[in-house]
Structure formats: structure tokens, C-alpha cells
Length: 188
Image 1: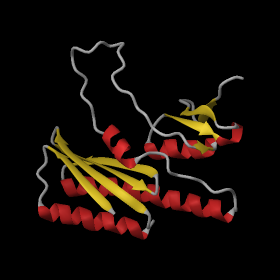
Image 2: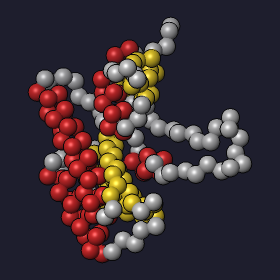
Image 3: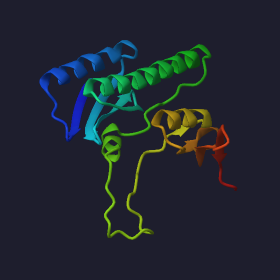
Image 4: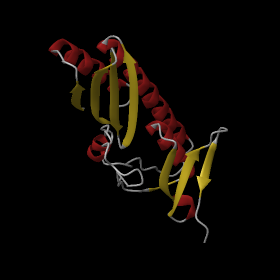
């Protein structure tokens, strides 16, 4: 597994780096196809914030937590990733046992997504109505259920996808405030 470290206002000692590499290596016991991980550390307001983003065979999983100690923040965010990896593996196992069609989980280019996850600071002179960021990503056909799963794994409130059940029409799934999910489909 390829591991990248990004630190802001944090000095990363060799002992802490070895601790992180050892713990991230244990993720592969849950799922052997973890391609890469990025550990982003920052220190603000007296707290260490650690965000781990992992590419699990094309599915992006993200865990974030904060604590007074860098190791504690890392361990907590790693627990979030472990929980997501286990849930993803169970989903794939259940899906294989039902003997349904194959799924392609290659949704994003990991390098492109890692660049998008960098926090951006808005300039004070920007126009409020101006478009300040454009995201591009490949949309592969999937079912609405798969789109909601990917949305939950990313921690987003909506997800744009091509609906394989309706002939590759672009749809949007979103999380409703009252609970559950919504599906937006274009009219013909």
C-alpha cells in the first residue's frame, strides 16, 4: 500500500510515522486490495486533527477525528476507516452470495480526489456569486443503491451518477433531512 503524509503545523517524528505505517498495514488484514492511503495531520485550537483517506479498490473511504494527542487522533480516525472497510467487505460478500451482476467500484481517480480533498481558503475579495471550484470525475453506470452506498462512504449529502437501471441517464441521490434518501431523475 502506498502511504502519503501531509502535515500542517505538525512535526512528524520517525516514531509516530512508524506507528502510523504499522497500524495502516494492519488494514490489509480486513481487505487486501487497499491501493493507497493519505494521512493529513494539522494542529489548530490546541487539538490535533487527523484525516485518513484510503483508496479501497476504487472506493474512497475517509475517516477524520481530533484529540489532544496526535496518536489518539490517528487511532480514532483509523477506527472509522476500519469500520467502513469491514462494512464494504460484508457488502461485497453478501452481494457475491446473492449471485447478482458484477459491480465496478472504480469511481474516482484517487490522485484527482486526493487533490480535491485539500481544504481551500476563500479569498476575501472573491465575488459571492462566482463559481470558485469545479469538480470533474468519471461517472460510471451503477444502481441507485450503489450510489447511496458511495455517498455514505464519502460522507457527502448528495451524489451524481449514471443510473444503469434506467439506461445510463444521469441521476442524483441525496440524503433527506427527515431521514432516508431521495432520487432525482430527469423527465423525458
